[in-house]
Amino acid sequence: MSEPKRRIVVGLSGGVDSAVAAYLLKKEGHEVHAIFMKNWEEDDHDTYCSSNEDFVDAVAVADVLGIEIEHVNFAADYKDRVFAEFLKEYKAGRTPNPDVLCNAEIKFKAFLDHAMRLGAEKIATGHYARVVETASGFKLLKGLDTEKDQSYFLHRLHQGQLSKTLFPVGEMRKPKLRALAAEIGLPNAKKKDSTGICFIGERPFRAFLNQYISSKPGPIKNELSQTIGQHVGLSFYTLGQRQGLGIGGVKDSQRGQDAKSKKNEHHEPWFVAYKEMQRNILWAVQGHDHPALLSDALSAQDLSWTCGREVPDLTARGLTAKTRYRQVDAVCQVDAMSAKELKLSFDQAQWAVTPGQSVVLYSGEECLGGGVIWGYSPRQSFNAPRMPLALPMQ
Image (cartoon, rainbow, N blue to C red; front, top):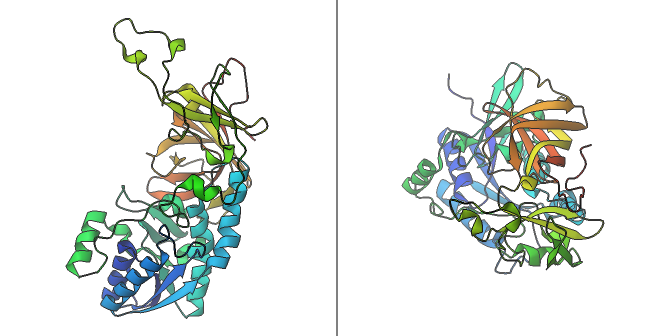
């Protein structure tokens, strides 16, 4: 039997993914309407903001596809629900992921509510993910293109949102999608994918953040408690950061020399290992695989599960997790769980586990949900002097 024809409102961003999503739905015979979401107003006419250009591209796509498009301003909602939380987290020394919150609060809440008021039966976006309906409800699955899968950013969607959402390009791989876009004559077929945080664009991140968070310079120290540089303010750094520290590689004489080679004599890069907020100290270590950057366990709060239950049963599942978007799924175990907190341990240590980022759990292809990382356990604390490298496990 053929799929029933529906009234569907597509979030048309100006990019090629949402353009192809709209094309596929129209090809299936649905009544397709488009909405362009404007989520940021400040600096709207500077060289970094692409909102106006994106809207022009979205209108051009709608014209080619023969569908109506509406420009809707969600900037006030975005500022209250996403940007305010973004600033609060950075001021506290954590590194938030606004794209996760934007999906939950704007694209699949404010946008969904608006579309329903227009009489839509479903909404659709160009995300690389899939939704399937089962006897027990709706499941969020990874996109088939493992290089583009975006389920990590969608893990806070609940059953009500999933039941009203379509991801038409979730079954496609990006090269095939671009080829299709060119074949049907979409004007943005070769448009570069957007990167970074939507309201920052391509602008220097530190310069943007400095408009909203005051700088408080302080020392950068190594694991021997020696001052090796100066930071411009702890809010402007994240764990695992290598660039922008202002300190060069220095030979690590503490690790000894390899008698058979001189590999250890090269200048190893420095990485941010810990932000000590109370004393305003940025601690750095040398080497990507320094034990201080590797964690065997973490705790998370502000949990959200796609099944809709406060405490889902995860005991019988083969679980994996991502502690950051561009990461291979890591085998993990649930050590403790409640409605408010989750504790995970990993078979292999995870690199630069960062408070404020999301940990997302999977069972095979299914995205189960996750939470905001709060605490972590590094493989090595500093010996001279001993200091609390990690935020406490709650």
